[in-house]
Amino acid sequence: MTAATGPDLPVGKRTAFEPPARLAEHEPLQRRMRRPAATSFGSVLVVLRAIAGAIWLAAVVLNWSAVEREFDLQLGGAAEAAASDVARSVVLLIGGTVLLIDLVLAVLIWFGSNWARITVMLFATINISVAAIDSFTGDTEVTIRTTFLTVAIDILILLALSSRDARAWARLRRHGRHAAASHPRRPVRDDPEDAPGTAS
Amino acid sequence: MQGAGESPGPRDERPAPDLPPRLSFTALLDGFFFVFAGAAAVWLAWLLFQQSFEFGWWGIAFFVVFWLVLAYLVLPRLHRILTTIYVPDYFIGRTRTSDGLLGDPVNIAFDGPEASVHAAMRAAGWTRADDITLASSWRIVTSTLRRRSYDEAPVSPLFLFGRQQDFAYQQEVEGNPARRHHVRFWRTPDGWLLPGGLRVDWLAAGTFDRAVGFSLFTLQVTHKIDADIDIERDHIVASLTGADVGVRVRVLHDFSTGYHSRNGGGDTIRTDGDLPVVDVRAARVTDAAASVVGEATP
Image (cartoon, rainbow over all chains, first blue to last red):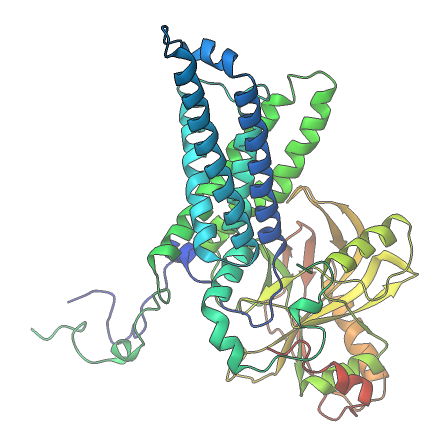
């Protein structure tokens, strides 16, 4: 027998707070929705991060001998030159692939892909966590001279892409294709393609 | 033993407690990212704050960036997370800001189809506000800085029934975009009744922007509203009855208790709690009013 349900108490009392699971709830789908600023901003930031990565990669490859000295990669012997070239190619290949994937993800996010958005957020979360753990354990302090810029870009990407607008829009693009087809488009200024500032 | 909890009663007829619909794995992941990004943003603000002591006079630039990040990224996200949990998600006579904070009070109700609302508002000398776009946002910035008139300036979004306003009307005062009367409209959900059981078609929130200023509440630059929102409510109703379009007004006295509070920007508000219900069904629909119908209706 539960105490809270007598005949004079027909309705259970509502809790003083809303269930925290509401934070994970789907946004209500809106039919008219332009690409939100958060999505554009997040996608542009991913491109910026790729550009920063390209500059870093170029610097590494161009100053290869200095990098070798720093990491003590000298192998000695006759194979040294060949091994060094192979190592440089591998770094260039892997780095270039990562940057290319980053760019592709940015384009996919721009056009409303939900999985691309989630993938980018997942990697941003990992990067931020690693930087935060490094910083809190005192290994690498995050300052403007070290990793501040990349950490800041990652946090801004995560903030933009996790926002409610970006979430709703990405889900709309995923779920809303046939729903949008069953509702005839409104002819007037609601058409997202007509909106100023959103031409893609 | 037949306990009260097991006997069929009114409690058992209630629908199952409303769980969030379709809580998928990616949705949970989204919820996690939403909260994690909030925490990360706090850290970013802290890092920026530390940097502002490192670079001499350049530190001031870091401090400005720190303020921007704090006021426009960190606090809104934290407000959003906390208000989602703590602010009741049912009608309490208050709109909510995009951060989920309590915004302007709902202080007028309307009865009638959308075309009649547009017709009555136009006849009463109100201008429909533009939607927020990049172009209209830029125009409001330039017109504010140059003190130029922009009578269709967009209004900020406020939320009721979980939806942004359907449309908004405004009257600029003395050609100054910082000062204006404005009123936002929401269509009520089908079959929805006001507390007390009255059916109305539209709810509206009218306030008077008296200046643009710095809010100590959100740390953002916003419009400050006049505290006596009843004056604005009565102004809206008077403009409608004075327009001679056949509107009828009945007042629900003490719809809410009179109260003092603050809106989402931290401005004080006070009201006597009356709710006028404006019946615009008799308003003649002109072609101009009919042409804007459908732009906002969901």
